[in-house]
Image (cartoon, rainbow, N blue to C red; front, side, top):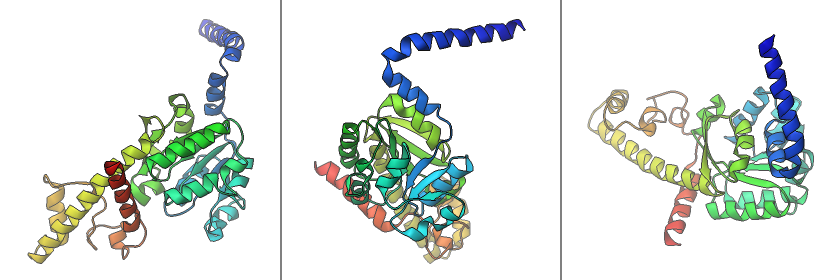
Length: 295
């Protein structure tokens, strides 16, 4: 009973403090209220290989969705489960003040945010906009400036882990933006990933992702070449993969996403290379890296 009274007294003291001090700190109020918000609808734009399972994981955590994709067929299964489908990114922004975007390229991101029917046409003040696309860091910074002019908050939060991690909810999110908003973003991203890492200001999430993908591209090429060499020299690919994965050559490309058919299940090489992260997207990232080096 004494413990209960102490807790009740502490709660009353906090309420008294908040009434006195929060009016003088409106930014703090916005952050706290958003991070503690009930499971109101979340806007989700982009339901491709990655966006589809990410959105489903939000649903599993009890969040109703307001969704849009440029391909209407991508929305059908969500609509059949009772989620609300709208006709443009602007309509998503009109109905939701927390929006996640998952898009293929910088051009797509610019169109979704700044286009004729983009998010910024109807975005609400105080909205939290999280872009999980992998795009040019300079584009993220420019979008953040436009969003800020509208009284909203933009954070870049690209992901690592591939389609498998998206399905299992084990993605890694690399987040860039105002640090005071990180808790609010983490609340949502934690429904889709097991690692949510704050990297710094807007664009640093994209910077971390580019570095990660540069290393991934190198290791995947190396794994493919090593596996091919072993096969040509008469080694069984499963045996070679086993040896690599207990030796110093082990890497994500060898033990989780092996590029040789028949070595492991649930990866693109086991499905005629369908799905997963396309080589065209990797080429896009390499172009971004060279552009940054030459700047």
